[in-house]
Amino acid sequence: MKHLIKTIAAVSLAAGLAAAPAFAQADREPVSSISQLIDRVRQDARDAESENQARIAEFRADRNQQAALLSQARNELAALEAEAEEAEAEFEANRTRISELDTELREAQGEFGELFGAARQAAGEFGSILESSLISAEYPGRAEMLLDLAESRTLPERSELDSIYETLIQEMNAQAQVITFNRRVVGLNDGETVPVTRLGPFLAVADDGGPIFVQWVSDDAGSRSGYNLVSLERQPPGRILGAASNLINADAGEVVAGPVDPSRGSLLQIYKDVPDLGERFEQGGIVAKIIAALLIISASFGIFRLLSLLMTTSAINAQKRRSTASKSNPLGRIMLAYEEVKNRPIETIELKIDEAILRETPKLEFGLNFLKLAAGVAPLLGLLGTVTGMIRTFTQITLFGTGDPKIMAGGISEALVTTVSGLIAAIPLLFIHSFAASFARGAQQTLEEQAAGIIARHAEEKSAG
Image (cartoon, rainbow, N blue to C red):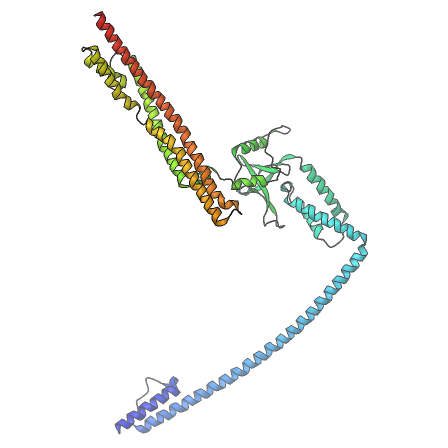
């Protein structure tokens, strides 16, 4: 019996949870008999059925509402489509009417239409030229009337036609002028105006504590959004800047030599692609850096040896004027060597002095062979860079052909820059070695002369005694 009750309770509980899980409550009183359990199951089933019916009714109400909304949306779509068809028909009618009016306008204009068409074409072409002209930096907005006339569909007024030749005359006169005016230059003087000297339509130079070449460029790649004066990305070399300085500092009526760009800015813009000294050095690659390191080390050592030899020569010359020998200079050490053996035979004295001179000679010639070697190795390193650069160039030719010279530019630059670097390093090293060797030979010759004089004096004293 107990087993049967447990089975019925489990089945009923599973059915109740599956049918109406929302009515499962943890705080319900436990059943004490089979009849209570059956009543409980029936009550749960009735509650679940009521909830399901409520849900079905809600779903049916929502379905009706959604159907009503869908019907409303379809009606609105149909109304909009009808309006679109009416608008399209009206647009076609307007376009047809505009075409008819254009035809009537052309017929009414007659020969004047062709004349004014030519005037509009000339205004458009000349307006584009004026807009990009450097002279417009002094007269901003002067091309607007011409460009508007070129785009107009109505007959031009007399003033508009007069503006064509008036602006043309103004342009011709301004092309022969060298004039200074105030204008804002992008990137200079915190947006404030600076004096700008214009040389006809060819170039303009701003004075911002020094000459700065500027160009007249569009804000938006040639559109009518406006033009501005902008400084060049990279200024020309110093000699051109010096000529520009003479131009902006000249007095009225003074004739000075100044720069002129007949291409109206194209030649000056080329300087942005011209590498400076640092970029050229980088083109030499690792070989150029080795040559530079060799030059710095060798030149520093050579200058040190030059100063040392100069001091040694000065000390020898000072010792020549003193009778007291000093160990701080080569001549003094030779005199001390003589003092040690002056009472011996003259042959012994000569050998001792020769020995002292031989001890001093390596000190005077120290480092000269290194300078000579460095001066000879630098051109060889340059030749090495030339060979590696040409190998790189031929490799690129093999891979990419000769259609684009820029592909080969890297290898050719490396070849030429390393050759120049080697020669630049070798020339000063040769001068330093030559001067150092000359000072060393001069000091050595002075020692030999003084040694010969000491021996001769000793011989005379001994003969007289």
